Length: 100
Image (cartoon, rainbow, N blue to C red):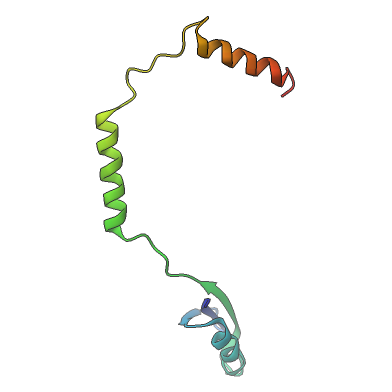
């Protein structure tokens, strides 16, 4: 079920918002709201409340930092020229051609 946010624009230029449980209910409420003399327009847009809880984000970052401390990739050396990996990379480049 899609939740909705009703945005109401007043004649004075002010804006109000209202959270509604369904898009259908929001669409039904537009006509009575717009019939009020101080209301310029009303519209409904979909809304969500899906947010990442801070505990989950903190756990993810802790795990990431732990893995980074264990293997920081500081000792990375590219393959030597003439090595097996270098030959495979050159063959792949040759297969793709110059314009790939």
